Length: 304
Ligand SMILES: NC(=O)c1ccc[n+]([C@@H]2O[C@H](COP(=O)([O-])OP(=O)(O)OC[C@H]3O[C@@H](n4cnc5c(N)ncnc54)[C@H](O)[C@@H]3O)[C@@H](O)[C@H]2O)c1
Image (cartoon, rainbow, N blue to C red; front, side, top):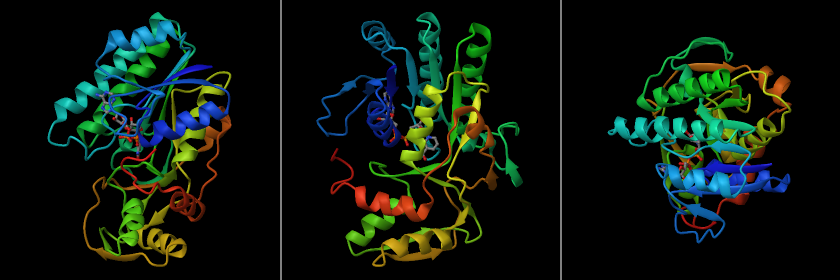
């Protein structure tokens, strides 16, 4: 399939490009920057360049869009909610409309577990109500609503993937796993502010990229949203224990504190993704952290 990937220089975009290309898809990637990597295969343009994006769709005969570009977490642009809304919601609407007008075969939005908000006990299915706790979460819910409305109203195949915390090479910031690796290399102690009982849902970026690939190659998409996570639920002391198993030199100090995304979410149901997409996670953190460690670029912020 000829696929347009937005956010192609990002953590997930890079992995999705690699895995989709390996599966025989013809990938066109766009991003506002290549982070100084001299990435000659990336087209540099902002998401607001709607005419430019439409030109790419026409000239390259794009058949599907994977939309991962934009403000990618609740901490980014926290002091500028209108930017989050503008970049995330408006661009999603324009891309969906391009998909409608060009009759693309599929549209995949990268959404987030934050759409559920503070859920409390219970395994979260995709039918759970959505409760945005941040502008970022609201932007994802709005994007998902547009995916659903466009899909129903105009009859094209689209879905949102609700990803939990993604780790892997080329993540740029705000990740304790990344901090542990970089701090250990620099001989520094990683300080992690955290409630020791709080539950983390990490997923390796290759599992996410494979879920994206599965959502493109499934003959039909029976539902509009899919939980995508590793299925492994861990407290921070457990996360640190696993990380130190692969990286014994890591020095970590946990101090009492609140996480940046403090919603209580116990567990996620993955049956829908398995049934409809044929996707199951492959990486528990033990394996995923070692893979991350082995693939960590020497200069993680700039090297490709
Ligand atoms: N990383 C996670 O833990 C996680 C979890 C849930 C959902 N997601 C979603 O997955 C998607 C990809 O996330 P990621 O982790 O790869 O993040 P990322 O920040 O690494 O990638 C996002 C990319 O979007 C680009 N971008 C930002 N603003 C842009 C603009 N105005 N025009 C063009 N490009 C722009 C950035 O340059 C960046 O390369 C995002 O939609 C994010 O919300 C990520």
